[in-house]
Amino acid sequence: MKILLSKFSVLFLFLLSWTSFTTTEAYDALDPTGNITIKWDILSWTPDGYVARVTIFNYQQYRHIESPGWQLGWTWLKKEVIWNMVGAQATEQGDCSKFKGDPPHCCKKTPTVVDLLPGTPYNHQISNCCRGGVVSAWAQDSATAVSAFQISVGQSGTTNTTVRAPRNITLKAPGPGYTCGPAKTVAPTKFFSDDKRRKTQAMLTWNMTCTYSQFLAKKSPTCCVSLSSFYNETIVPCPTCSCGCQNNSQTGTCVNQKIASVIQASGKNNHQPLLQCTQHMCPIRVHWHVKTNYKEYWRVKVAITNFNYNMNYSLWNMVAQHPNFDNVTKLFSFNYKPLSPYAGINDTAILWGIKFYNDMLSQAGPLGNVQSEILFRKSPSKFTLDKGWAFPRRIYFNGDNCVMPPPDSYPWLPNATPKLATSPFIVLLITFFSVLILM
Image 1 (spheres, rainbow, N blue to C red):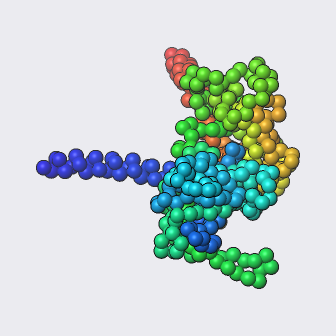
Image 2 (tube, rainbow, N blue to C red):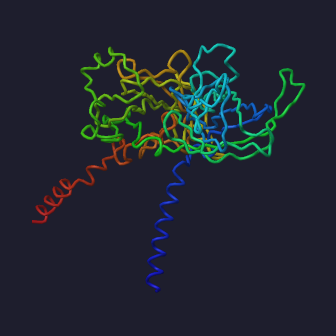
């Protein structure tokens, strides 16, 4: 009996460990409180339902929703229908045959809603709508980190006690990287008039919180990091097969650079990866080059290269973690903002392109790269070029963690020869000469 109980205990702990791993997937050490909050405000009651404003707030510091934009889905608890929408639309109408006269906008039990495109007529717009589902990261541009639409719901109940919140919220932005919790009733949202002299409030407000997991969104990494320095001729490439291997890639997803002109001339842009054949097979490579060492300053050059023939990265951003970001002096062609995920520690920064200049990272080819230089003031107590200190601890591109080279491969200072010291050939040679001397 004791043996049986011990085996059961081991099995229980094993299953518990796997459960704990899956629940921590969405945690991001550099953005521990980042999430997408969906606020559902019932503004008024109608004869058979209500009118609500649904607002999507992207509280993630550096992860944005890029083209083709978000898709929001849910399951109605009762027999609700969508009579009409402003600022968004359901992708399918469903079976509305039981309705006489003008049918509802959507009769599906599980509707999927998307944002309207830019250029939508004004009578179909509300504020913060109609950007094709593209939502900026909060640190990059908080003004466009919000998206909203208005929805008129029928057959739902007409009081706070009879109406029910939607369930099984799903958010694709644009892939399946988000997991959303259940709707929670919160304090009604308050609204101010344009002149700020009158305040109204929603009849009822629900909040849904969605968190991102890179493992859920993509099966493999999407970017990698290479390194170089002025004091060493070695260029450390991205690790082999960082994002996949050529032999394991699906047919047609990897093309030789020599036929790039044919690929670009075809005009394909379906958001499916079509990569240049490389040893790392990543759509994005970030190169960090330690360029110059001055008396009081040191300079780094950062280059981001796009190897995807089918993707332009708009509103791109890069996050870097390095202890000298508390002493940034100047950036020459990127925007910069410090991030402080932990109080009192300023070692993380978000970098992004200048609007109308390099905020678009073009698809693979001659224009498929952006670059800038960063000038740091030296901190006497910290600065050193020894043991890879000048290289970043972590790099993110568009919110995804990039694959770093192993630390023992970083460029070493000229007087450091770690590989020779551990070489079996050198050890054997020294032993041989030592024996000759003794003889």
